[in-house]
Length: 207
Image (cartoon, rainbow, N blue to C red; front, top):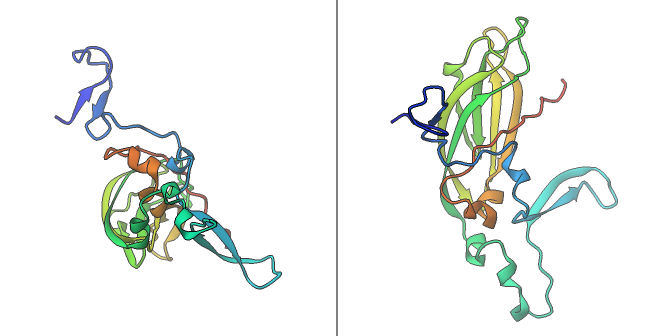
């Protein structure tokens, strides 16, 4: 069946249909990172030079200080140490349902949005399936990528505006750190049915 009726009495035609993919799935009011209290890794800023205040990058890792090697608090690690030290291939499945209140990119007050997904050296575009003249886009796209983790962990999801004459414009984007999910106890405890989340892409920087 395409869905089942929610609430009381399946014979009530006024009840809203619940799609199978949403049945039993938690829906986050925002980004899932806001609900995961403990991140598996720490992050440190990298400064341009000694005494400088300009940040030129960041480091991500784990730091433990112990008296003796045998006192290392292995039990406090987010996952078994062997997983953190052994890169493994993962399948990443991304489902993008819709986008709302997109920033207009055209003189008509609308945009012609499509998706561009980047993970490591892989980029997937739905430019040939762009949606014309909307501010709310119904994408319903499924993507499958490969990631070696620990490793290249930034999944970047961009909403682009299709343009016939000039280069396409970036409407907005959001980023997901896959390592913060794969190696998180809380993420694993969610089971196979991961939550539906709303992400708010920030606007692109001014030219």
